[in-house]
Image (cartoon, rainbow, N blue to C red; front, side, top):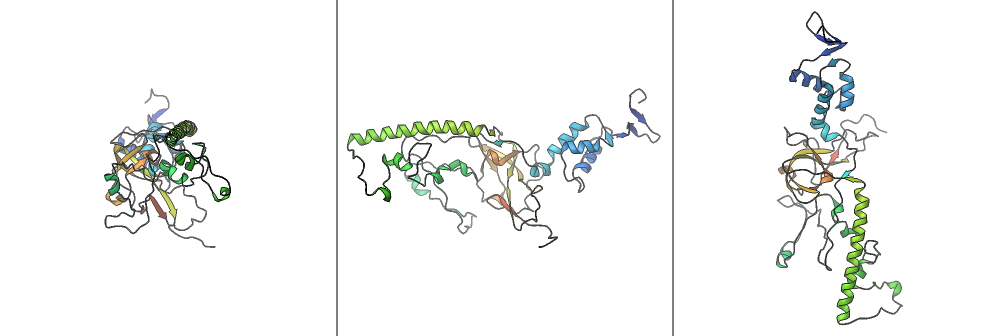
Length: 329
């Protein structure tokens, strides 16, 4: 110590570096200091830089800044509560353009029905598609962008920029005659082989317009997104959102949990969708999720869930009630 500049030892055997106590390379001691600085009621899970600036006023050990950063990053509460300030994850994956009309059909569930004994509240007819040899592809849970065409094409006679015509015209090869045009003569009638030729020509036009539109949309969307991939066996946190039971008197939701878990990935269903191993408590939730709803867990969880205080619903929301009402208007 006499040869090490800045270090000294007092009469009690404590080693000092300037005015800071040197912490020995004993893991339990260092973890106790980090826990006290990060997890107590007075520290409220601060970020690594703030904790480091606070600790370095009193303590010193080699690699302390790195140890602080690792400890905070692995904190389970920090991972579930911390807001992400990055681009949305998951590059846009355009749907495959069908070869012909009615080859692919988008449909919504009938939801909000009384729950069955199995815990389901939706209806989906599955018998007919088996006899007709059709294939069902379910979208990822709570990601309506996957099948936005279902909502948008309900307005059949509205011009769509993606196909440069209305859905009605793309399907039938002619404009829909609305009441405003009933006093006008109809369009030219075609028969026989001309019908097939005209339909094939319309389909090729629509497919090319869709291809151009998808390329343009993907270019715009990916500029505001970032790619993120997981591997089977990884643990991830699942995003949830709060529904306020009572307004929180101008208090922000800064400390409200944003994620639950972590959960194990058991399969990759596509470029940006993953299947999770969910507990029985979430049996009513479709277990396939888009990557934007997931955040990588940095360690294997010691506890499976943190849902007891949240009462997470099957739509991945929870009602947030105030702990105490301090003042009323």
